[in-house]
Image (tube, rainbow, N blue to C red; front, top):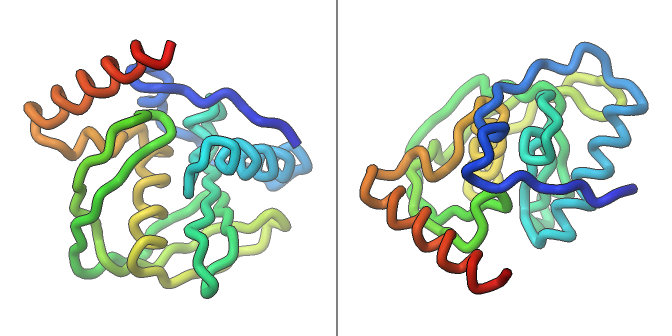
Length: 167
């Protein structure tokens, strides 16, 4: 397994819309493994292939719940959304920024696993939020895109200021 470089905002490649995976191959299986390693290395709970400059519809996550082990989704598709939940989100591609975002509270998602088998999952709470956040990445959307222009500008300035301090 390998730790992949993570793209950071404002890299324009983060706006690329990911293509569906045509066939689950050993390369896709390796990508899933590498994405998990990258996510854990960055201390994240989710990662989309777009964030590592692979523009295919693959996401991984580990919300560290006893009811849900680490999960991966190939070609994820949200079938149903219900309710609303506002929670604070962060992102490996937008480091040091945390803001409140409104998302669906419950959802049903369908995807393929590493063996190419279709599965359906009902999710709520943090898992539902994480799934939506990562699918947004596959569609070229970042969580800061949900913020008002003023909040987005403040978040970007905060990220840039903290980035300068760590360099």
